[in-house]
Image 1 (tube, helix red, strand yellow):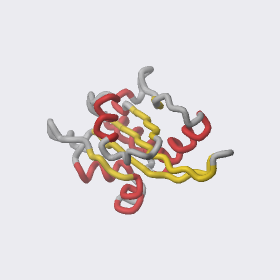
Image 2 (cartoon, rainbow, N blue to C red):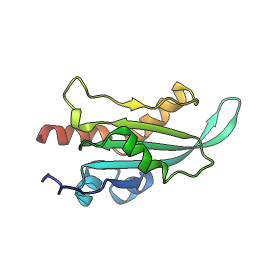
Image 3 (cartoon, rainbow, N blue to C red):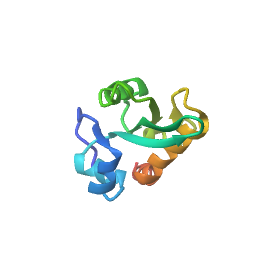
Length: 139
């Protein structure tokens, strides 16, 4: 993939749009928009033990540029309905293949199992792992 032009804003996109418009392929969405960073949001309804059905606003930043988690979160929060509990995850894809690489999940009060399950579903549905590995192998 050719290097995106400088000062290209991140793509802010719903997970459902990645699934429908890009066949669940983050790499295709990234390529179509010629961007280094993709900020994904998703309103998801979950059945929570002892609390019933709840809707969460999950946000994931997958960044190949030097965008940091705070900047990504600031942009994603603008998409969030005020009434929904939020879950945020930051993936510095630029660090793939180094000791600095990881998936960073912001502290929240929703529980580790629920949070990890929602983040894992986003990673799976958008084929995030594949996009990160493919881009890293071209670097």
